[in-house]
Length: 192
Image 1 (cartoon, rainbow, N blue to C red):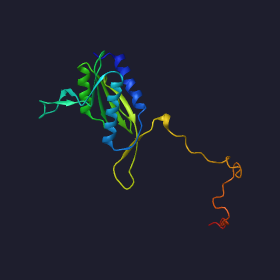
Image 2: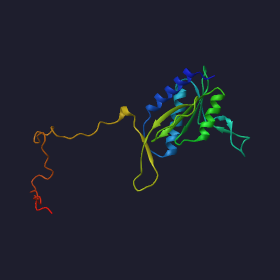
Image 3: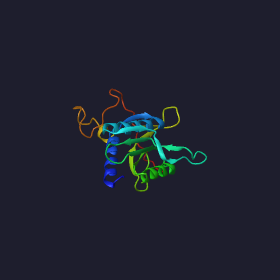
Image 4: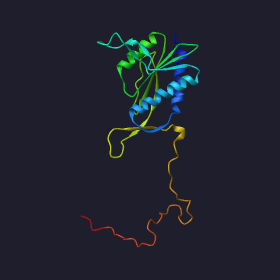
């Protein structure tokens, strides 16, 4: 059975691993696939067996009730409860239902949510691990491309070069067009 401490440690370990993840300009399906592969590799790195798309304990809704749904990643551990992980960009009730059923069956249920918005906490005992990303529209295209750069890898912002050029003193403006005579415009003081 999942004990609170064990499940929290597993979720924290996964969150730490996903905090290191970086990527640039991926489409939504590619982001989900990358996160699923990262989760599986993290599990294998812990000495666990990783299964992609194993069957869930929750059956599919009618008319497919004779078949079972799948989870994104299942992790079998030699000691402790198995771990199931679902990876989603959207907030889906079906995912919550599936993870609650997995938790009721004695598994550690983790919901990895990625995106740009706020993430609502799922009901206990499902654990939430977030993977915040940024997005942009591709040039001349539609849709969104997603990127993630961990805080430790973000470059420092560009700063003004003032003070580094001995010809430019503090508080002076650099001449953008050297040698050109400026067109001076006198302010109009005639007023209305």
